[in-house]
Image: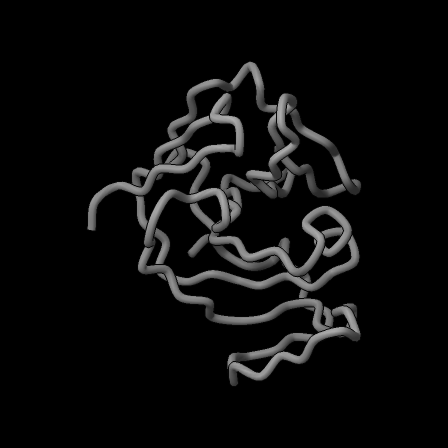
Length: 137
């Protein structure tokens, strides 16, 4: 598979993944729901596997003592979720261009999911997963 490309909605922030993730996570926690409007689908990679252009438009919001979220300061697109004390980042799958071949592998923080939908895909569900302990995929 070729390298994956991604960007924000307005194109000010662009990136290339030099490593292709094979599995994704759907996070249903309150913060991800409020930020994305639903659950947040992302894939973990080493920070070194993300080549960024337009970094001056990337703004980081520290959403908790352990986590920050990266978004475009021009259009507001949420692109990254990153633990502060680890060498990996989660890339928003919706920001990737075209087909990716990445498959959803699990749901986390399902105890906090919205009551307006059901999870029926048969994938693993974790009620209160401590995501900071998960290794990069």
